[in-house]
Image (cartoon, rainbow, N blue to C red):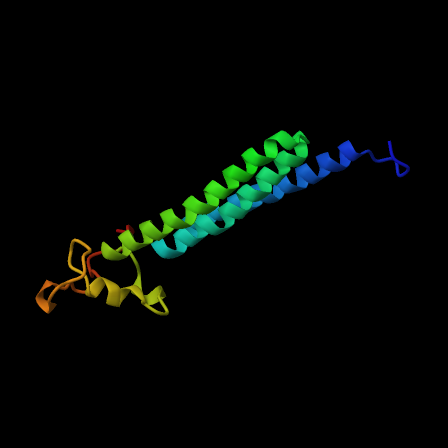
Length: 148
């Protein structure tokens, strides 16, 4: 026991508890964003950004709770793999959603993907000639975004 009456075990447990609560809050915010945001692109943002930070906070809480250096490489590996896979999967889902017209154009400030999609054929290869090019996705008037 130290002079202040608080042991290091209690301090580490308190830090772990705070980090667990913050990590749970970040993951909850990500889940709420998946339900509340209006279109696919903003939902992907909500599902990846706070969730990765929430996982980091949870893993840090585990490191403080376990108090064993042997687990640190495993926790770092888990977080690095999450950092590598979440943005890549969101990027691929976003491009697939764009190509299948599952987005709301009114929420885009700049559409940087329109020229790229228009200059490629339906298989995704660069078009050799103008007739081979694909048309830029147009808004489907019959699509109500799943809110029929």
